Image 1 (tube, rainbow, N blue to C red):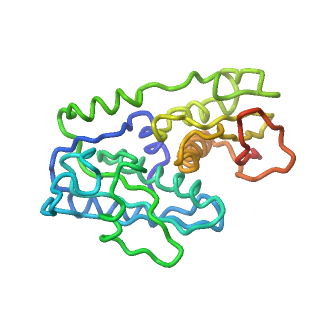
Image 2: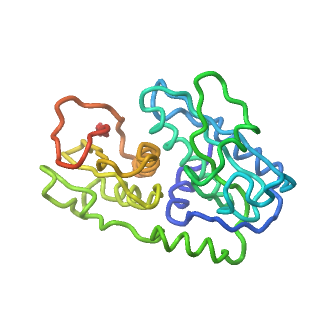
Length: 271
C-alpha cells in the first residue's frame, strides 16, 4: 500500500492537465495504477466504485477529438470511473477516484477530472458495464506536455482553476459564525479539502466544526457533479486526518443544525 504521505504530498502538487506529451504509458505503470485502485477499500459502506483503463490509438474517425471533444490532446489512455447506483454512490465514487488520481500524481502521471466534456458513447463502446452500473467520469492518464496548448490555458483561465474561495468563507466553528482557529485540530484537513478540484471550480463544500465533530454541507445547486465533488473534498479531508493521526469515522446525524443555502451531507465524528 502506498505511504499516505505520498498522497498528501500529491494534494499539494496535483493540477488538471489537458495537454499531453504523446509518450506511451508503460504497461507496468498502468498495471500499478490498476493494482492500487483494486487495493482500495470502498470509502462508504455498501457502495462500489471501480476503474477501467481505456486505450485508443487515435485511428478513429474523429482522431484526436475522440472521447473529449478536443479538450484533451496527446493522450491515448484514460481511466474510466464506474459505480453501482445506490445511496451515496456518487459521493463514494468521487472519493474513491480522487484517491486513485492522487496516487497517479505521486508516481509522476498527469490526470484531469472530466465529468461533462467527454463523449460517453465512445467510452461505453470500450468498457464493460454490469447491470446497475453507470459511467460517471473519466480522466486522461499519461505525461504532461512541456507546454500546455492555448486551449488548455484558456480553459484553465475560464474556470479560474488556480483560485480558491477564502478559507473563512468555507469553514466555520460553533454556530457557523465563528472562524476555525489556526490551532484547531482539523485546520490542516480542512485546508487540504479547500485544495480539492471541483466541477468548474465550484467548490461546493462547507463545514462546521463542533468539538470533535465536523459537519459537512454542500451549497444548493452548485453543479450537476456536486456529489462527485463532495466525495473529492472528503477524500482530501479524511486522508489528511489519517496522516495527522486523527481517528474518526463518517456518519449521518439526525437533527443537525440547518443553514440557509446549504444542504447537510454527513459528519466526521472524531474519537
